[in-house]
Length: 337
Image (cartoon, rainbow, N blue to C red; front, side, top):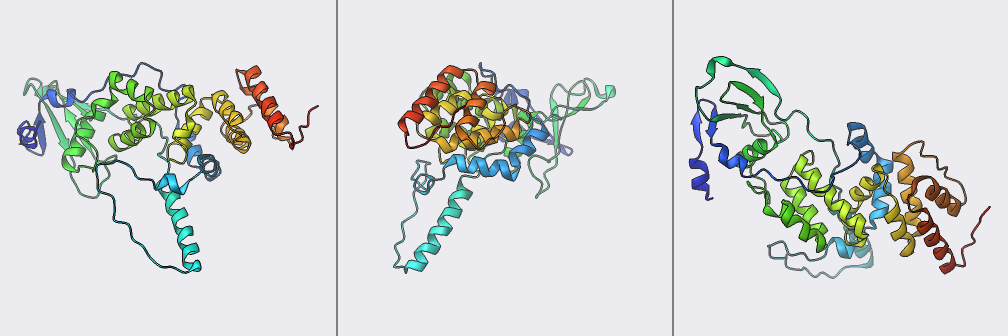
């Protein structure tokens, strides 16, 4: 649909716009077959995600790698021309510090927030205008400087109901008046079930998550569906290394922790000699799931054993993996009761 054809379907009516249902219906996505998440994301849980101690642990688990953070990516744009300079040792060291800070900014994590609950909320019902028209009317505040999230979008139904706009209506109106770079008016077909599944099987996790962050608001149901389905697939395949040193590994691990699914990541860490990550992950688990029954003792191996006994489902496999790790690292003294 061209811009001319799109705008021809709208016409001004007092302070609003009248439109056909066809456009908005065309961007509704079907539900993904897998369960999106187990535990409800509340405001309290979201606040824990933004807490500094939690963020510090997530950043450490991300393992920021400058080479990967600034690697070349195919995004449809020409790369910047490289600049070569002669610098002193002090200038190089100063620049290295600046690059590390820029790398941390580059992998800033997408937020995990609750779903928006006021979508479609009925404001009033005016029976006197029933039958005035067969189409809906959208009324939008187009004041500059207002965020897309807080912008007022209301819809008058043909039956006289005045309600707040739903997610698709808000997306369409905001993108029409204040288009964001990289965000499409119609949701890309890649987010539909039949197209998303092959992308997941192909391991295109970062591409999916980057595109979801660009296309949806973080409190959108479609965002939760796509992102959490991707997290589930990464966890099932244990391909965490694909998201390492990207902005998506931290939220993935937070998702696993608040849904109490530690087994696969612990197994991955033990098999890939990431002992420090095991301890950090258990610390994160403790912060988010108070009263889990695992005390953080001085003996790190005992900590892991207790955690496996209390919180994990594949206890025998994880204990075997821990023993194998100890055997491979015989210089570490194993203290057992």
